[in-house]
Image 1 (cartoon, one colour):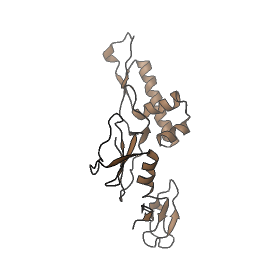
Image 2 (tube, rainbow, N blue to C red):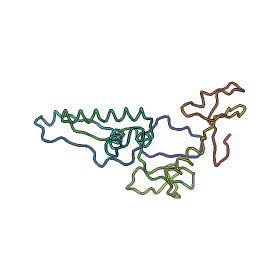
Image 3 (cartoon, rainbow, N blue to C red):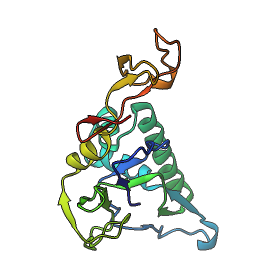
Image 4 (cartoon, rainbow, N blue to C red):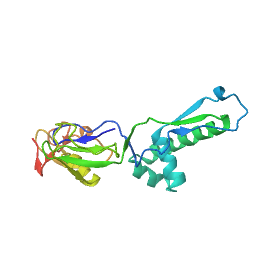
Length: 204
């Protein structure tokens, strides 16, 4: 799934996608040696995010907190993903079912690019195919950048950690987990918004 960041007044994604380092090297697994009728085995659908949770914990030997940071989700969310994955694997082993690995709310930790024409930052999930044009303006004037630069410049630079009153410009430090829209300006008694920046300057 390709993702882009553009320098405009767009809102952040409402859905928290799970980051996956690389696509699975296989599409699934089939049982063998069972005395049961093959057609009665059924199948189990293992989401790619569930595969990644198993890989991080049971293959890379990370704990749940470390794994949640790697996938970009909260620890409780990761624990639910991991528990679901283990339950599905157990079901497939006990019932002799085929495992299919596909789907999920994920994006791959792939190469990132910056478009010189429209200042868009975008990633290239198809690692084996070289990115040749910007997905927004179709310009071929693109350059390869690191993921840190793409995220910091494409997202954090236009939404900083400050809540601001749209009426009197009173500012408060944004607190994680407390939406700016729920903060009330002590001077105007109206809802605050997130302060927006572009190129180091405030956007009005």
